[in-house]
Amino acid sequence: MIEIKLNNEELKKEVKNKYSKVATGDSCCCTTQNVSSSLGYSKEDLDNVPKDANLGLGCGNPISASNMQPGETVLDLGSGAGFDCFLASKKVGRKGKVIGVDMTHEMLEKSRENAKKGRYRNVDFRLGEIENLPVANDTVDVVISNCVINLSPRKQRVYDEIHRVLKVGGRICISDVILMRDLTQEMLDNSDLYCN
Image (cartoon, rainbow, N blue to C red; front, side, top):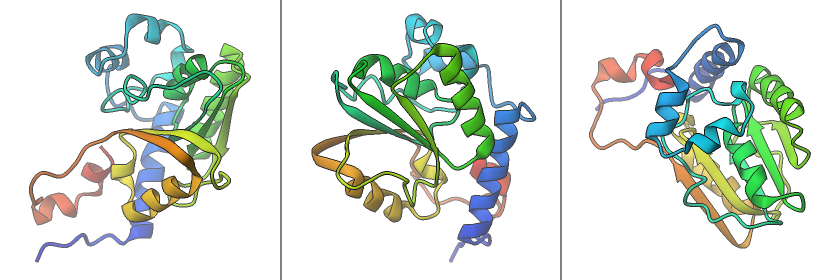
């Protein structure tokens, strides 16, 4: 039987360290414009958010399929530097609200800085883990996530939290990676692969 040698807390620490470094520029994932364009973001999307908001960390475009409406409340799980939050902000308008949750202080600092630069008044960035969302029950119309849930070792807990915060009739739009076959023990033991 193949099993992961790192426990949940160790995995969480690895993920946190990796994305803290990305936020501070100590690590780079990819060429952001090219990656984002290939995932379905338009040139207009890329041009209309603060430059530092797009870190190229996503694996899809949850905004495109979310059907956000003016006045809705949107929650972004693992909001990073704020890229999807800022795009959602424009869709829900001044009467709407966007909440971004990230577990690293560094990403939170970066996203709040970007919100100031772009004068986004309907976006609120909160420190928290997606397994324990700092969001009240039944308050969210749309939950989005872009390549973040796969990083959680407690996925069922994430989905329980999504269910808790969604209003009746609320929607989920997730872009993520899934496992199609078993990984080798060597892959499972490599924490760098877990975070990439």
